Length: 302
Image (cartoon, rainbow, N blue to C red; front, side):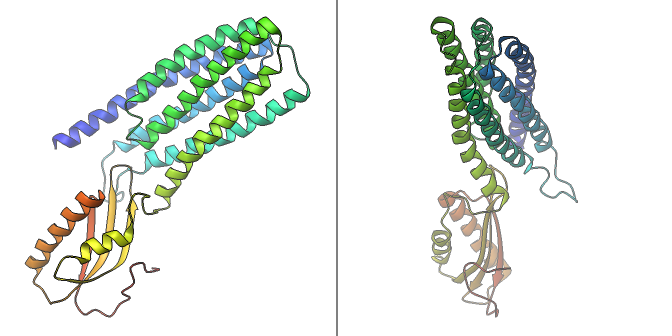
């Protein structure tokens, strides 16, 4: 119960930090849109677009964080544990879309370069670095163990890098008049977003598709369970991740003898202990069998 309370408190801290970063990003976006229009800087406007996508992604993360705290019920037996994975999927997909839009705009600007008001670009990029830097620091500690928080953190971290790139571009334009640097930086920001977003999109897709986690080898688990003396065969295996805290194993186990229920309970405890300590699986559902005529293949198409 204490662990549940700690987990709930952790979620509340995450939610509060997310809310603060949402407000900060709304402020930055508004300032950059105005500044980008006045100065004519595409890098600043692209950074504002990126920031606006961040506001949306942070709102999604915040809503998912709130939903994730809700208890399970009779018609939602898993509760909303998948909400944060969906948020991570939506956010990583939006990162890729924003990146492609930025690169398209930058290529058009390369073909028709424009003069940029570098003074405004420099001052607003400094604001972006300060606000995003603070947001990144707020979410840093919670980003490692939670896909949803990592997607929010990635949006903000790439924002901070984008603001640094815009600052460098502003300085080069101010002193040397290199206006081509503006679209070049936009392309680099876009490519970096694609690189960062793809990995998270892949991870969240794997969880949503109920794929076996990368770190788990099904044949190794089957061999480990089969090593118990009373077990004849392990088949019909399903392993999936519900969210980042829960990995589920479901299997049919054929026993050598027609054992009592109390004996099965003792063996089940051994199986749970083995798969938890060796493979990190914390939810086990076993169907015991003796002499049943069904497919004995490890993986069966249902």
